[in-house]
Amino acid sequence: MKIAIISDIHGSLTALERVLARLEPWQPDHYLLLGDLLNHGPRNPVPEGYAPEAVAERLNMLAPRIMAVRGNCDSEVDQMLLHFPITAPYNQMLVDGRRWFVSHGHLYRPDEVPLPSGSLFISGHTHLPVLAREEERVLMNPGSICFPRGEWAASYGCYEDGLMRIHGCNDGAELMTLVL
Image (tube, rainbow, N blue to C red; front, side):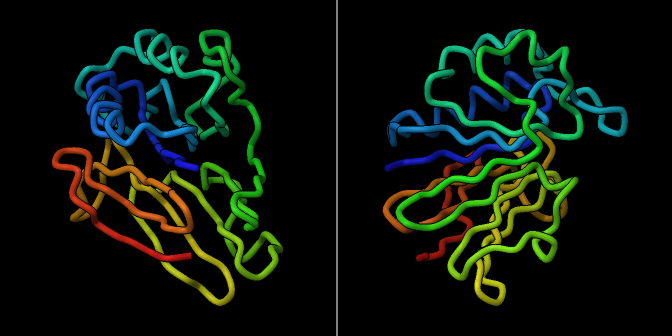
C-alpha cells in the first residue's frame, strides 16, 4: 500500500498542485491529510496561489482516497466545501500491522498518547519535518507543503511497504528515510 502524507496546505493551490504532480508518477493508493487545508491562519501571510475554494475542488477529486484530520486553522465552514470528513481531531489506523495515531499536532503530544511498541505518532502543525525513533515508537511529521520553517524546504511524506520517507516538494529529493 502506498500512502502520501501531506500537511499544512493552507489554501495554496500552487503548493498543492506541485506536490500532487510529484506524487502522480508514484500513484498513491491513499492520501493522509494532517490538517490546515484551506485557510492560511491569522499568523501566516497569504500564501502564493491562495485559492481555498480551488484547493477544495482539487482535493474533492481525490475524496475517495483521502483520510484527514482537523487542524487548528480548519473549521466547520471548511467542511462545507469538502466531500470528505475533516472534523476529527485525531484518527487511528492499522497499517501493515502497525498502529498509526494521526493528528494535526496542536492537541496531542507523543508522550500523552499511550501506544503499543512499534506504533507511529504522525502529526503536522510545526511545519518542520521529523522522522525518528523515540523509545518504542516512530515520530513522523512530513513538514509543510506551503509554509516550511527553519532550514527546511516544503516537504511531504510517503509510506510504502514498511518504508517511510520525507521528500522535498520542489525537487522531489529524499530528505529523510526510515525503515519501520
